[in-house]
Length: 371
Ligand code: DP6
Image (cartoon, rainbow, N blue to C red; front, side, top):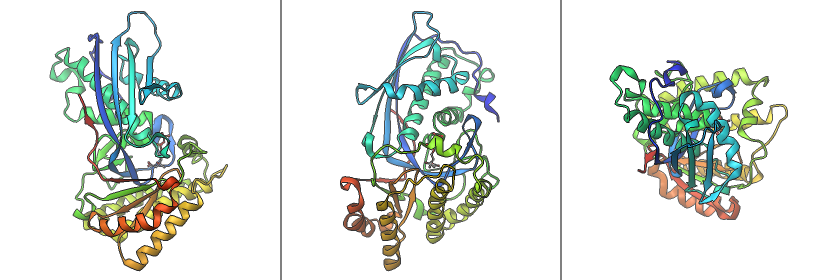
């Protein structure tokens, strides 16, 4: 399959107005995406757990333009207020996806969005936000197509898998990790030999058995630093070009995907912990060894990591951590150990969070349509 599969054939902007709404979750990568090529093609495969509670809810209203205005016409609202600073990112997104959604210039859009987590929590809303918007645009496409009564061989859109695949494909063009938020509970993005059907173009559901211990896996997000990131993910990804360790890192991600397959199938919690923590620290090691170099962890990030290691050694419980491109810590653990671990988080780790803030989340099953 190539990008051409997602260029629609035979459709026209026939509907005059409408409204669609989706809620889409965030996701947490276990094998990290870090480094990309042109058109948001990842340098290495990644695998994530879809989250359940950290979500973006987006409503997209559209009405046919009456003028011949050739530009993209849209307004963005966050929590009911106009958000002018969101516009450039969405403008870029529209430019990237226009070839796949030819109706974009024919309508005026109102994008209303809200997050279930605080906006200034340091939790990236790009995965949930871009996936919710991509799904809304897919619903518009679906309405336009169904208004035309196309026959089976006239459009790829009539293929059952098409809606989610294209939603993920579009979300990827908004923000790479967003392509892993359409479905759940375990998603793979990026072509790699050990995962059949994996592709650079969109996220797929992990196609192999997953042990019960990894079902309902818990993710408590410790908000260590709620400020804006000093270095955006996009800049960080680009610093992997000409990075002295890039080649080995990309190979390591492929190897880790293969190993994770066995770990997930057998319920090897210790193997999981070692692989996931190594991935998180490798991600940050790549940041520290790029040029220019940078550090996104804060002193409290390290305090938390050390406390987790001490507690794990003392109790033998299967608590582990992962990090995104920021200072916050995702504490991961199996549901069956929830009580003791949550107790430890509350009594020991929350003290390291900014204003004591943390979010309890767990593995989830992807986006849902509201209307
Ligand atoms: C560290 O998806 O935010 O969270 O494609 O430039 O929008 P862009 O980057 P983004 O990168 C996320 C990187 C990461 C690891 C991951 O989620 O796999």
